[in-house]
Length: 614
Image 1 (cartoon, rainbow, N blue to C red):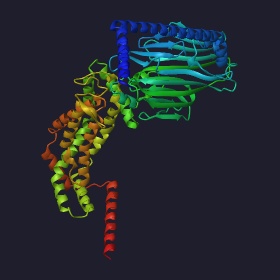
Image 2 (spheres, rainbow, N blue to C red):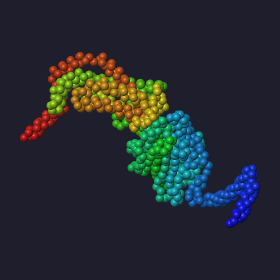
Image 3 (cartoon, one colour):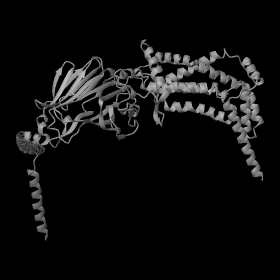
Image 4 (cartoon, rainbow, N blue to C red):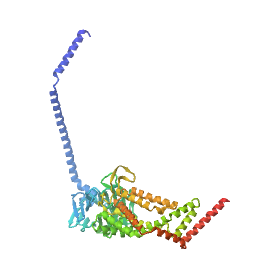
């Protein structure tokens, strides 16, 4: 390329660039063009959506037309004679009295709402035992080679006063009825299941009708963890024995015999299904729900009832939906109160015949629960005062003998422990002192202490009743919340528990004199110091009413012992002990046998030493 060619091509390039710049659109023209393009795109999108909608509507219309035309046939195929109940209006009928409000749904004919009018949740909201999402309840059986579940079918309600009939109808002469009835001011619901004209519909091979019941228990209390730990399935066998699935772990069990009732028991409320004729082959299950703030556990029961294929079969039952109040449960004479764990053996008797009745008397006076507990503690302490006096007297004797005990320990420090023990027992016998005299009265008081341990966490009367700084005596009191959680202790500080612990340690310190003298007694003393610390940890999240009771009991014990000091003259008591040493010792047969055994044991040890020397 020569010089002229290069200049020519450059000029052509400049002309093209200038032409493109001259003909390029302005900013206003570009904006207008973009708007035009957006408008076109919007129109195209709307046209596309309309086309898709038309296609969907056409498909829906086609499906609806197919469903409408085939609906009856599909229902007949799946449900047989029950096909007409596959659809209906899902309304809820209300049945209520002074204490209960029930909502019974057409679908399933079951209770989908249960409100206890006289109680509230821990945060003062309406207390519901059941809501629409928490339960299922229905009969399961085989009819015309089809599995029928009544909880998915529609019943027709008929309300007459306090009685509601829910009918699952096949024909005018073939139906299943659920009859619910209420009596004034009662938590017990009458519940009757009737099968009429079903003998040719239910499979001839079927000898039983299964009733399946599941419930997710709704959290009602402040301490959800504690509530879950006492929630489970309880049941009473035909022989009246009451048992339950584990309350602290998941469990499933096929029970070995009939049961009269099954209870979905929570901390303070229960739903109990009662059948005096008994449920056969019961299978029950309990599982904790950890991923929900609303529910604590999932409980279920599969219960069988015999079916004899007669024209009319009736299953009279009852439902209890209410508080775990001992007297209320016992008033129905159905053994329902046995689900409340008052303790085994003598502990249960103390609660049943003493504590509950005493508590009822004081609560009837209309006093605050804190004062009621104070009066109960005072009454029980006065009742036990003779035993307390014996324990104090024994402690005083042991203190007076302590110098002589110390002398024996020093004298036989390097000797055979058996000799020191014999010398010690000889001193006790001469002085007329029983080394266990202080322990035995305390052991006799132990059933009452354990009875209280069982009573307070189950006493619904304490629920949401405040006293001093505690806002709920049925739950823990908290004066401080920790920024961390201590294992077994929790993340809060209970003042009543601290007061109980401190007073117990002081009480132990006051009576430590009777634990001196030998290694075994010293070990017992340290055990007595250790126990309050264990209780401090374990009771921190327990009912504050219990810690308050133990604290008041300790304070009253201090007062009683202080008064007893004026009734016991140490000088006279010491003189009596010295006088006893001059009197011949009366040995009981047991003491004589014990002495003979000690001599035999000592002789055997002597023989063993001689053998070793040889």
